[in-house]
Length: 89
Image 1 (spheres, rainbow, N blue to C red):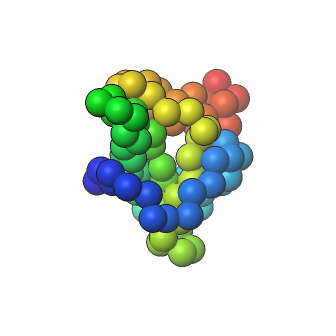
Image 2: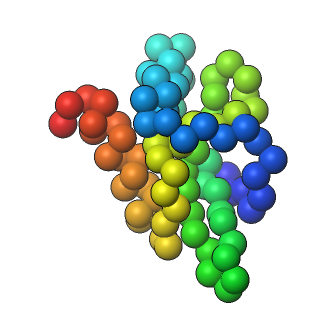
């Protein structure tokens, strides 16, 4: 799912992102299916970030950082870095 505007509560905390990921897993869900691509427009450029839907509110999103990226690769790599760090990889 891709959102062009943000009308949701957004939290930019790596620890909360990984806790939310773990909660989805504990409840028997696949957290990868709960990720959403967000677009930030700046002039004629588009930047991307990936948010994880909050299990409890189903309205808020957790982000692994405040960074935005010029491509999908960078945005998804940020998710991977946050998860690897939480696992100690």
